[in-house]
Amino acid sequence: MTQLPKGGGYLLGSTDPKNIFTPEDFNDEHRMIAETLSRFLEERIFPRMEEMDAKQEGLMREFLVEAGELGLLGADIPEEYGGSEIDEIFSTIIAEKLGATGAFAIGHGGHCGIGNLPIVYFGNEDQKSRYLPNIATAEKISAYALTEPGSGSDALSAKTKAVLSPDGKHYILNGDKTFISNAGIADMFIVYAKIDGEKFSAFIVDAHTDGLTTGAEEKKMGLKGSSTRSVFFDNVKVPVENLLYKPGKGHVVAFNILNIGRHKAAANSVGAAKYALDLSATYANERKQFKVPIAQFGMIKEKLAEMATRIYAAESTVYRTGGLLTEMINTLDPSGPDGYKVIAEGIEEYAVECSLEKVFATEMEAFVVDEGVQIHGGYGYIAEYPIERLYRDARIRRIFEGTNEINRIIIPTTLFRRAARGGFPLKDAMKELKVYLNGETVARENPGDVVQAIKDVFLFVMGVSYERYGDEILKQQEILGRLADLAIQAYTTESTWLRTQKTAAANGQNAKLKTNMATAFIYTTVEKTSLAAREIIATLVTGSELVNMQSDLNKLLNYTPIDIISLRQKIAGAISAAGKYVS
Image 1: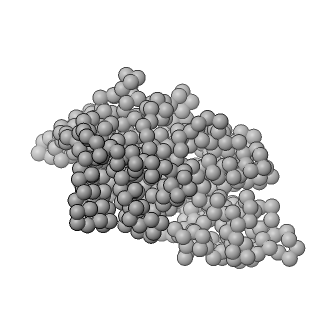
Image 2: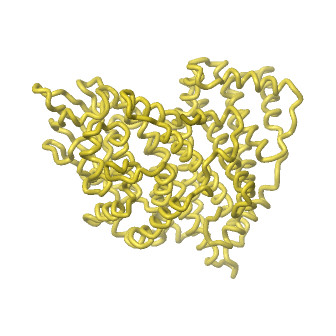
Image 3: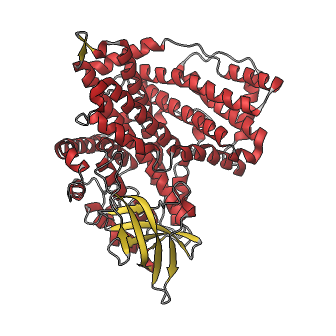
């Protein structure tokens, strides 16, 4: 088995740029599927966005069927069940490209992302053969039913109940789900319910079963073309053979599928943000004020540059994670008696990376679409302009697949728990840092050194937090949130810099632009690192101890500021010249 990096391992040592996946590593097949999807979106989806947002009857199903004919629904499904069984990079490319389509991205992801992965990873042979071929063609539309009126982030408090029938042939489901994407067009649901009110479990449920009904379509802020309804179960009979995995193991299915869902949501955000920047750059080149294109104004240059820089960082992070997931999935052998366990543990390995990329990318998207509206001025507020839809559609991504607050809690909590089990050597890392701090420290003189400073600060503050609180640190959400931000900053800056180094070593395209964007991002981010770390330290200690720790932070963050304004001017020039995002 290939030796893969451990989840969270990026914090503990250096990574060879050759060992990460970047968009520059796309092969001919990757590029072909990207081009195929781009044509499909340009010819079929974008021209009919208004009809989709008006929920034209049958349109979403029509588009999904067409996507199936192009092989865009079977990326995660094995060939033997009608899919194409291509790697996670293909799935990431598809998710990114679909990001700009708003409602269609949700219809697609609800159907062949979270809507089929529970069967792909946790279904038995009978379940896979009965359902996956129909999902790959959109003959049957799938939906994922987890959320309830009283349980969103706290999924395990679900009230939907399953009771075995007297003859032992069915589970009888009662309860209701809310905010279920694709509910109005679904032929089947992945439903979570508690057997006997106790054992949280997953089921495949036929949408046309007696007793299953849906509510009215929700009137939403964005994603108006996607179906979102409540689903009600009134003595719904589910054959026992439709239980997924094992009784009481629904959390294993749900949480691991959400990890993959978070990765794809992050890719969606990258695609939507690129489209928003393309629109904004084009508009800024065309719109004149005082007889000058507004793209030439310094304040607009700053916006375009920062939008591009954050997109570049998110894109680098998402494809690095996609590469990790691909390598991990390729090493899994689910054929043995513990196959399900192998899959669950494999996916869970990169739970930290999936959570942090989801937080970063969705918040990047929110920033980019907001600045896009600002660049458009009053026109950005008018529905005729696509940026208005992108602004509304973006808001939900910080909420679904686990709110960003929940994902922020997951990141340090997972690392603390791994450290307690010996899977994350925090104590050893702290010892090494103390040796460094007790020696003669030197200034961090280049972007790579500044990235290392960010990683060192995270480990230092994480260690100090644990020394102060012990296991009680898991109850200190304000500190956990800041630790999450530090972990995010470490991963995103490193991913960005590694990609840039890899491009430079290969004399790749736009190496100078990549270097400028990576450098601007890293030196901007380290200032945020400093603030978060100092806020945590000031909460943990006082007096002379605080003075000493502040001194340690100063040593770790000893770097020389750079001229970021000039860097942004160069970045903006490249974006304006192209009239779109380039990297």
